Image (cartoon, rainbow, N blue to C red; front, side, top):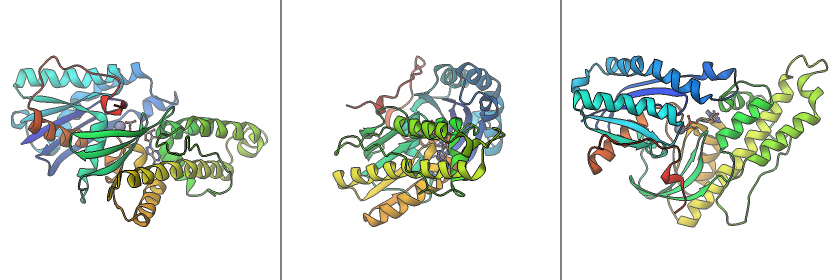
Length: 345
Ligand code: KG4
Ligand code: ZN
């Protein structure tokens, strides 16, 4: 079965072609980072307009890379939500038009379910059940996963998502959007023990997160140390001071993400733990997960970095399983901004 998948939920237009759940034949990701960079975050109206421009060439490139034509596609998989409504609508309308004209069955895929599936794009695949942390720009959620279709939300952020905290701290430091990659790079040159930013643990048994406090602490620290960070004449950020803030901030976020996920593993007595979502591309988080996981006697699984941030390969894989289980969706499928799987039952 050949699956063509399209992802357009935020600021990446992506298309992928997969054969069954095994062979990834094409994986094209077209990022809008440059477009949104000067605004310090994604501008929804600009995002949907850019998706409109990019979607045709991106899908055409995916078909070309896979060396197939549309007539060889058996199933279309399309991100239905959560995300920006205008952006999602571009992908869904495009997929519906293809489905209608070419008479190809299609399925809607939840973007968060896609991130959960992304770990199966790696060489080593976890056995069920497992605990999964999905840390991205919009969510920081811990799931207890018992099979491909059953996920129970056991922890989530009460305010900012982890990726959002990276993005906001980058903005405070005058660093470019998105914050995650630049903060993780600068952190390598900084001292993670130089500044103690508060860790928010919430109630003793809670598996929830809160990252708005640390963002405020960084903002206060920056305000109080303007000269140290931006130099005497405000000429620009001082490299070593900025690197120390990045490393200390990153360490605090990583510590809380890892500790709560390990606690969830103990609570549910699982042997396997999964880390995915854009923040899972963070090398320090990956290292701490591996170390703490093995100390806890867990098998640790994470997708290769390219499949942590948004991509359509994970949507193709999820679409394959959804189509096999549920068959095709009807043409009245609609987009949604909030995921049902990230709501507590
Ligand atoms: O999964 P994703 O691509 O999109 C959403 O579904 O939100 O995640 C994007 C988020 C952004 O907030 C970005 O700053 C963060 O993932 N991110 C990182 C890293 N690479 C991307 N955060 C920390 N370290 C990284 N290396
Ligand atoms: Zn995502």
